[in-house]
Length: 244
Image 1 (spheres, helix red, strand yellow):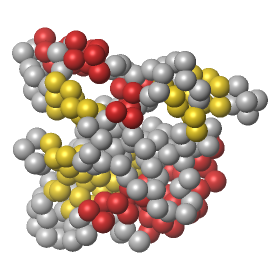
Image 2 (cartoon, rainbow, N blue to C red):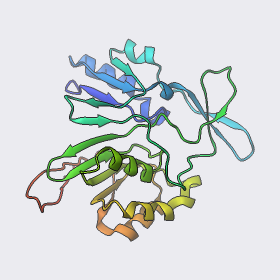
Image 3 (cartoon, rainbow, N blue to C red):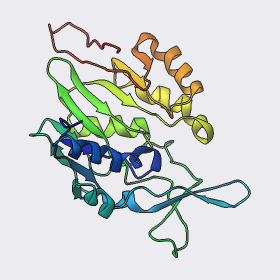
């Protein structure tokens, strides 16, 4: 843990940020130093509106003060930046451009506990991380893809138009209320020619099956404890990963 230098938070949901204080503490305890990258929108309170109209608040993420109290250097900035000596690109806001990726209509936010709940379908605080692997292309870490994975890929192509997207890795958030856009998402991804689509926790089994039917062995499912190694090689070689 002491070797970890940088943490890039993806978005302000409890299941993506709640472990940060303990992680920071473990890094510091081993003599390390860590910078945590966030943006102001991640610290809004979040809630979900049920069909009954009731609002269920979501557990808050750790505050800026709590992260700093545990020993992290926190960069709280809405803009894009490069990390670790310029090797990783951490995005700013991801434009919502596709006609079908409309976000979650049941998602709400508020800036403080005494404020009224406001619609927050797009989760504009979500960020992606991109790394360019020589001779392969771009690896895109898309977290939950609340922006919509087609929007993620479209923005990636606009940022780096000369470099192919080799792999998209992360949750695609196509389960539950989002299942209606699975066919459009599959068709939208065809234009990018992605070699590996590695789906994470919130993709949903229907989306996973639809993607596998469309793209075959390009699609795989990630899980806790899996390690992926993308290696540059001959121009015709494929990226490989090892599982531990």
